[in-house]
Length: 128
Image 1 (spheres, rainbow, N blue to C red):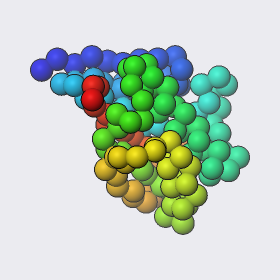
Image 2: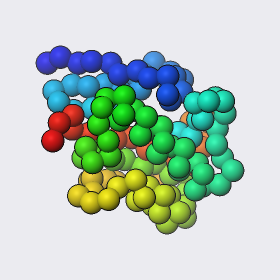
Image 3: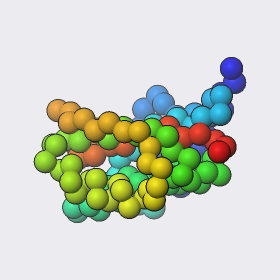
Image 4: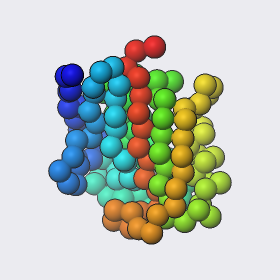
């Protein structure tokens, strides 16, 4: 098995001992993304929609760095601070996918890093 660490300055640097993404055996495993704006380093928390959009834009930047897109995503995990946010998050999340949706689970957790409301991780296939 070989693995390649993927790093881009188009998303914030990791805030701990982990990689933005790892490519292994034809798959990309992206670490959970929160709503850090890479231009400012600030969290985007003005609304749950804006927060989710920033998370998805960070994921998009990672996918683009690997020269793939959301069509390559096969699995996502959404972590929410409150399941009451599900519909709003789902609406923004869904706007990034057009068909052949990935497998997914959504879980509510007690607390997320930096007290954000949503964190999303993805697994994608490198080639179709």
